[in-house]
Length: 235
Image (tube, rainbow, N blue to C red; front, side, top):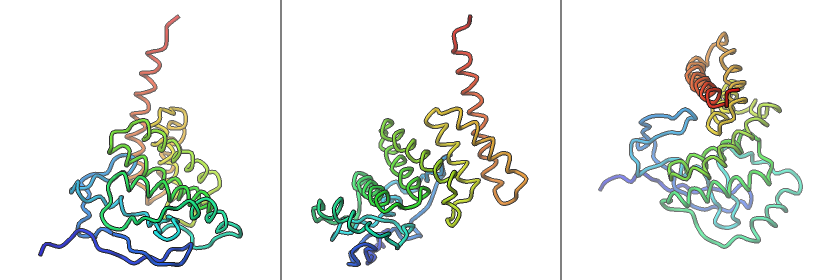
């Protein structure tokens, strides 16, 4: 019998503490062919997308979260979740294989829950970014741009208050994401500013690949600026 790419995992909801099943993708089936300039992975097997299963959706209370969520709930937050999520929740399950539409729905629920719970800006940026990626793969440019901008704005907030400090994200990577996402939404000013900041970090070891990527993308920004300059009416 052929092995399934998926396995079922019992998850404990960090909100209501009840358990529910959720699919995960076996690591041997996760093969990335290439990575786009904003780190969106392109998987070798188009039928198995690990991104679809990052969010756990509690079938009991509707609370949706990822492994990055903090288990701590500030006073009053659970009451807000009960009012805004659980009382409106129509019991259904996200266990089993997910369609791209279900994946988008799961991420949007996690973004809403993370916003109510006041998760770190860097975490909310990651959720928004992945929604943007999913819309990109659907060819929905308008929604992609909407969530890429939202992600960029969260990364800007994270950069200013340094809430990425205790995560896997480095300051250089946050600056790169601000620059690249700004480039993608045609915010040339912020793209220029933050790519420059990344390149200025080249004397610091450990981020050589990221700095090379920034130099490549900076060249695209320069070309875009030249094009805009040429399109300006001449006196």
